[in-house]
Image 1 (cartoon, helix red, strand yellow):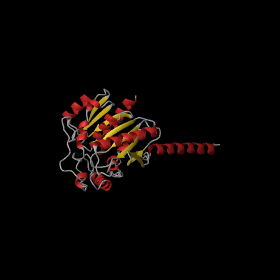
Image 2 (cartoon, helix red, strand yellow):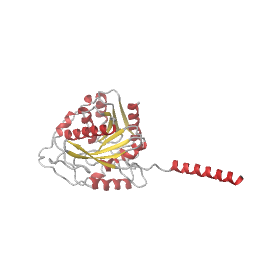
Image 3 (cartoon, one colour):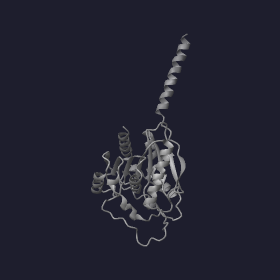
Image 4 (cartoon, helix red, strand yellow):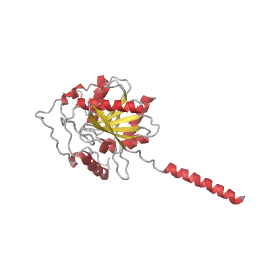
Length: 307
């Protein structure tokens, strides 16, 4: 009987060790899946990273120059930079849209994107996600994407659970107008210098991560997308935002003006609102040392809305 007891004890130890190893192993990243969403007859690339039994659904919209994957799913060996992975780790399924002319989404026949087109495209994507998941959507926009997200929330708020405006470059006093002489899309080449230009805080991101970002950004978006009808941005009115809203401001973001933020925040119509400053961050804080603070602030607000 004694050998049997020894074997049984050893088996139990082996099981315990195996469980400990499983618990200590890093979680495997969710699979990246590409979908095509039709918006007014135009195909939009939508990227998905989902988790089982999600707490909610987050839809990301990128900024003026670069598309979804370099911005939101940057994979750097030995570093955690993917915002999609970060939100997955907090229990949320995440989707990221390539707007017209960006990444895997082609330009339309006009060659131009416009604020109104972009807002309708995002609204149609939200409707697609709502029908697919049965859940209202947390919409999260960066820079120009925050402007598109706000405009969408103003015209089609019905399936938006919350709105996050990050790197928000709007001053309520700005009068937007189209640049003179724009008859044909310029289709200018993007540059490595432009891809690295948002990283301005010393030590906030590694040189290796910047190099990967520049490479992936230029691969995804070699040609700069052209916008016109910029006067349509004049429709942005914080007082018309009726959904719960988080205003995220990085401390050293040159495009996010504190005084302008104060006026926007005060005017947001929905009383369920927060304004969070990310210490030490700049316009690209989602890829820098404040990344976890940005993720935590975003998901804490979403959890507060879901309470």
